[in-house]
Length: 227
Ligand code: ADE
Image (cartoon, rainbow, N blue to C red):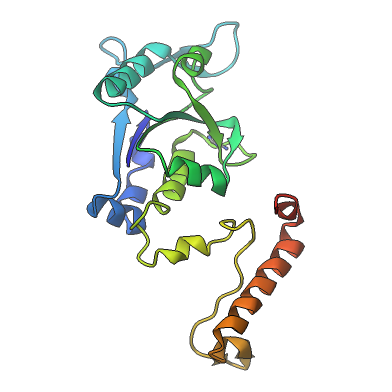
């Protein structure tokens, strides 16, 4: 998979892709992440990328020309399955969207900044609009990192134990059950006996009960989506 991210503040996004799972995924050749500086496509000597909004609204708006140049250049090089715009008024990200996007070959993620992008960018180029929650960030960059991370860890071969993404919270519509490691007894706080029993079927039953219980108490809304 190839992910091209367009932004005017690339520094906000570098380190997450240079660490841990996403770094290893790139080293293994399972994903390519390319960051594109919108400013390089800016207008004139000042490489202008934003301007005042028409109608006297407060705040700057990213102009269509630099974004058009950048996206058009990428689209001339390869075909993209999705051009995603990160915005608080997009569809709220969930695990099934991450699963869907992880099946794509090439995607572009556009990060808004200031008051966002000229509406005509959205009309002309954007195929999906994604929010990471009902709150407003200073720009789309951190949201883009969240989206890219959620996608990359689902790509085949990225997680060392392939089943571990399958047992994540949300992957089956439920929250994940509690987990424990050594010591079995920490200052009197004991690991549930069942986990030490070696009885695989009973352990699986226990995990399912715990997942159901957690989901029921913490996220009753998720039950509505269970078939
Ligand atoms: N840009 C600013 N806030 C955002 C959010 N919550 N989700 C996605 N992009 C954003």
